[in-house]
Length: 257
Ligand SMILES: Nc1ncnc2c1ncn2[C@@H]1O[C@H](COP(=O)(O)OP(=O)(O)O)[C@@H](O)[C@H]1O
Ligand SMILES: [Mg+2]
Figure (cartoon, rainbow, N blue to C red):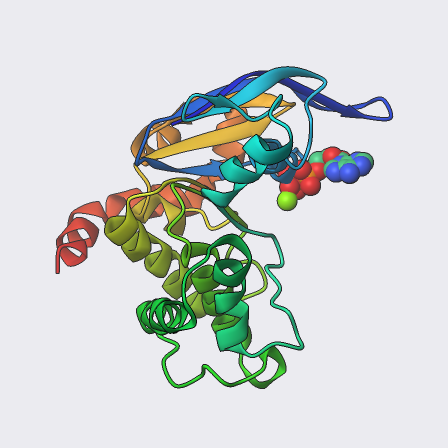
């Protein structure tokens, strides 16, 4: 469970977060949407303990991330996976070495167990056979898959995805969203997906929150967001989503397959 309460953060007078509150239940994944520069990445960084709030706090599974220090913060971070915006791999390491990296850093597993975990995770993201390639030798979509495998290999309880599909072509982007969804079914983490993939992300989340002017301007199911009368939400969610909602019966049928 993630609880954000009255979070404030400014940079040199630029008030980015202005009393933001949101709760995400254990095992739930929500989509976080909002204009460019509105503070989505800043919010995720507070959740990961990478930024300290001016006021307010973030509580993850009962631990106040905003005040934790030293070993306790390290332990909390170990239970957290972060797929960064631009989610780069280490260029000088193979795909295998990249995915093995957090296990080597954070655990005392034997090399044999690490090998097993890494091969298993790479299989799950469809990268079997590419273990020994370097990031420069694979496509952008494969880099994202590898970064996803790296963030999931430690089996985190909380996953933060910052624009996981940005820069990918639409088909590959959709496959990454579907992959996140199947990983969630398998691992049941609590998570947030920051994305501009509207309406496509609506297929894989039960709830959407929209950030605007430093607070959560609106939250609800994809359907509620689409039928919102709030002009700010409407301008953001737009006509694509309305068209999407009309196709819904077919969509939910195909999802069960
Ligand atoms: N470390 C920082 N120092 C100064 N300003 C920052 C820093 N990080 C973010 N900002 C500012 O905070 C605002 C929100 O940024 P960000 O959260 O990255 O936006 P987005 O919603 O696109 O992810 C932007 O105006 C950005 O310039
Ligand atoms: Mg961002």
